[in-house]
Each structure stands twice: as C-alpha cells, then as structure tokens.
Image 1 (tube, rainbow, N blue to C red):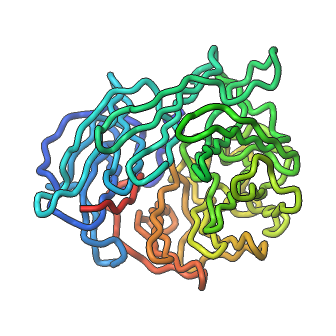
Image 2 (cartoon, rainbow, N blue to C red):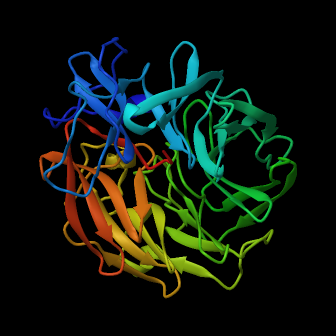
Length: 410
C-alpha cells in the first residue's frame, strides 16, 4: 500500500517510489532534535536521519546535503526518551536505534531484523510497542513486539489475532494505534479484506485490550456510535489525557482508504483503566464541522488536540487514500477540545496533503507539524499554539516531508 503514497504533481517536492541507491554523507553534527527527512531524487525517494538545533525558526533549512545518515530504504520512524528508531523495509527488514552523543552528533546504538512492523507507540521511557499486521490476506495473526532501546532488540514477542468476529470471519484486523496505560495496552484496529483492501465492516469502533507488559489478551470492546478507529499508515488515532482517559478518533473517510462510509467521523472515550467505552461520551465531529473528517490528532494538554481534518466536501471516492497523498491539498489543521466538544480551524497553515504517520512533536504546549502543501509550493514545519488556534512558520524542509520529529536525551 505504500505505493499509493507517491503521486506526481509538485515537481519541486514529490515523485514516485523508487529503489534505494547507496550514497555517502557525513554524520550530522550535534543538535537538540532528531528529524527523519524524506527527499526526492531521479530514482525515487531516500530517507535520512539528522540532527538540528531547532525547528521553530522560519529561516532554518532542514537538508540532507552534506548531512545526515541515509537509511537503507523506505522507513517508518518512532522513538523512546533515549533513542530514535528507523524501521527499514528492505531485504531484510532492519530496525536501527540512534542517539545523540554529545559533540559527536547522531550515533548508531544498534540494529536488529524483524518480519513486519506497521504500527508503533512508546510504551515507557526505554520501550516501544511495534505491531506487525497481516499482509495480503491468508493470515489473521498480528505480531506484537516489545522493543528495548538499551539492548536494541526485540525483548518480547507474541503472535495473536487482534479479534475474530466469528469462526467464519475472513477479514484482517489492521492495527491503527496503541496506548499503554494502567498496566494495559489498548490497540485500535479496522477490519479490511486483506487482498482488495475493501472495508466491508464500517459500522463499529473496536479496541482490543491486553495486559502490559504481559501481553495477555483481556477483551475486545466495541461501540456502534461511530465506525472503526484509525486507518493504514501508522497515524495517531488514540490519545491519552493527563487523567488517563483515552480518546479515540474514527475518521470514517474515503481519504483514509475506506471503500464505504456508513458512520460519522467521531471521538469516543475510554475512562482511565476501564475495559469499556464510556456510554456517556460521544463527540460527533462530522456534525460539529459541517462534514469534516478528523483523520488523526496529537494531544497538546488540557483536553486540546491538534489534528488533521479533511475539509468538508472533499471526502469523496475521487480522493480515495488522499490522507496518505502529499499532493492532494484536501486537509487542514484543527484544534479539537474534547472536554467542551468544539473544533476550531488553525489559522496560518495552508491547505495541504496527507502523509504516512502524520508526524508531529509536542513540546511545552506547542505542536510542531510537518506540512507539505502544493498550495504554498513548499514543505515546512508549522508551530501550532492550540490555545489560540494559530500557527507560525518553522523550518523549511528541503525534500518531501519529515516522517518523524523527535527529541531524545543526550
């Protein structure tokens, strides 16, 4: 499905997926942030990791020219408090951990091989959860991994289906988001046909709950007030508030790859430590915005989320998978107040396309987004103040986008 991601349009920024071509670049000098940079070239795209001192200044340019560590191929990226990880899809698939070592800059801490990893989340200061999804039909098992940033390897692995509707169930369950809280791991998923990617079951939201770190299955909870939570591509589809309550995001959107839409885009709540959805809470985001589809969001604090939304009127079958397409400017940023059930457009950010993982970084109440806009003719970091619903330009991106923005301990 990653081939959907690259559609020709903005020559400056984007092109079709290509094969990896080795290049030699010096390691980045020391900086406060680790960013993943996806660049475009005549043979396709290349992924890099590099450090930068800051990302909030509009005069800063993030570039791989003479800088950064090129990755082995197309990657997902994630991080703990101490390391940034690249998960390369190649032959073989390799996960690599990087840290910042004083004046030496970006340093490789170690690497390991894996079969599949498609959905990621930080479990604690030194551990990641990574779930490999069933690919191409024929299997209903997911591989749940715990990855340690000290030993740099998989320290626990469990193979298990996320959920079976019945003995005759033939739909894959694609993991879309992970939250660890109160000794439990919450995994949202959406059902789909593994070969055609048709979404035949869109009337129910699902979350499977496991013990953590034991990874023992507890239950799968369901709610029919909205549809499945999240979509393909490792977006953030569940967030945890300060009090431990979890809020889930159901896009119910053609742009998110759904082949049918039967329920409104909405937000549900799971109270801290509970094993069921909160019957007293539902936010119909689609009704509140006149047809907007909330794709994903990041928690900024005090009940405020900053998220990406398909603008009303643009969630059509023509824009199928537009949420993963940087060249389709159908998205805007919004601030969602889950306590007061309001949605406010963020001013200062152009209409833009989507991308894998919807990467953002939250620091001191501000949310830093990688935005690729054919309307603006550039890719850039935007710094969002959720309290005022305003944004200012941050660093310019010389390339397609930033698939990851992290800050790790030196």
